[in-house]
Image (cartoon, rainbow, N blue to C red):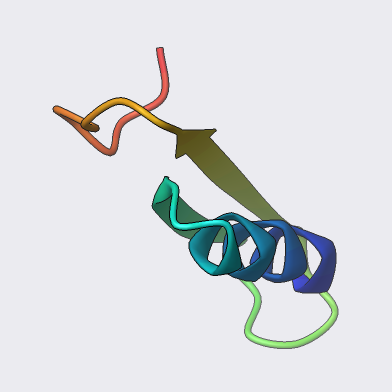
Length: 50
């Protein structure tokens, strides 16, 4: 999560279009946590990663 957030912030600093989507597992603490990051110069039409 932290690395994905840093990549997203770096993209924003470079004035790119950014989408950051966190995905937590069923447990609140100690469970699985993933994120999806899109950094692009183009417009992001959908935040969903395909």
